[in-house]
Length: 96
Image (tube, rainbow, N blue to C red; front, side, top):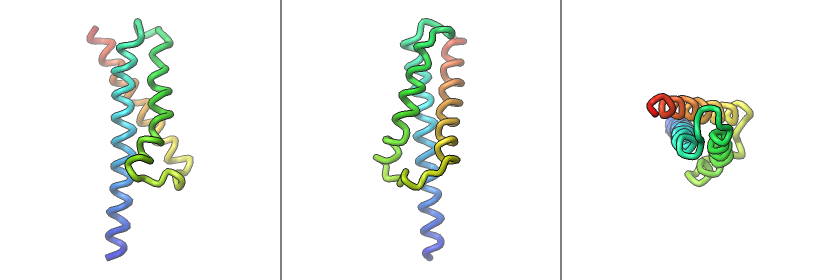
């Protein structure tokens, strides 16, 4: 029974971390589209940096223990945020 609860908690933790990273990446892509004049405008990177900085706070607010994050966890959340930012801003740039 305890093993099942541990697996469920680990699964909830993973889903929460992935969801926050992905949604913050998409939000950063939308904000980049609003604040940047185009693809070469370096201001478009600032929302990505803000999303990366806010990820841990958002995950902590949702009840995940971020003190136990390893380097792999931090790289994973940063990579997912970057990828979704890149894809969403790229789509928004190509439709304009």
